Length: 251
Image (cartoon, rainbow, N blue to C red; front, side, top):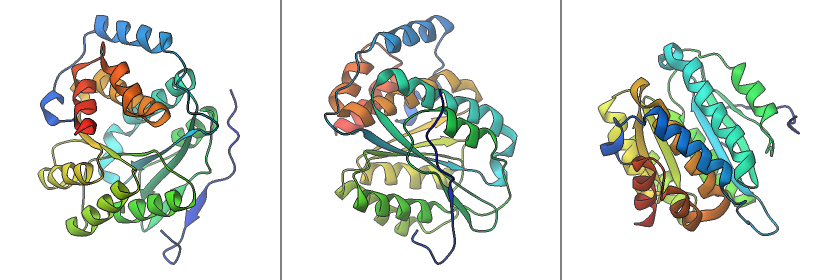
């Protein structure tokens, strides 16, 4: 399927800008197979006249280079899986290098975003999570954004500023789902607080929990198209980490 994607936008400096307890569980191949069958059998989530809108953001700085190809494959699977789950518009964002920040147009099919994702290469630079959060606020002030997904491994910014922005997103009912790669302790503490303040959820992932991340990304897509009720229904027979994600949101 082709994506109705317009050319993405590079933003200049002057422009606007699940619980860790399940993080090390690994789903067996049998569990993954059963999960995929359940996803394919899910009824389409009715979002009324509109569509769910999800911002999917990636840290593309140099520290993620070694695992980028693997992570890109996982992120791609989330996009393709949403087509069978319900109506969903996705905007892809990433930051890297020297103050480079990119966001695509809003898209409702996977092929175009996948093409962008597979063409991304990591460039050394500092994190720009504040810029991402401000962008998400700007977007939802224009038209409702239902969730923000961020995949990253580090945080080199002011914790208080990031948490303040996360709280603002929470006031707009935009939960932030943060998936952390690696074990940066400072980043983990900040990411968990950002997820809490935005009424979202946090989960760790690494090479030993790839199948879990697949499940979690699909669960977020379900949430963006159908809300908490759809996620709770979806999580009944899925990976335990998905249930924990639903419990975090329920609180």
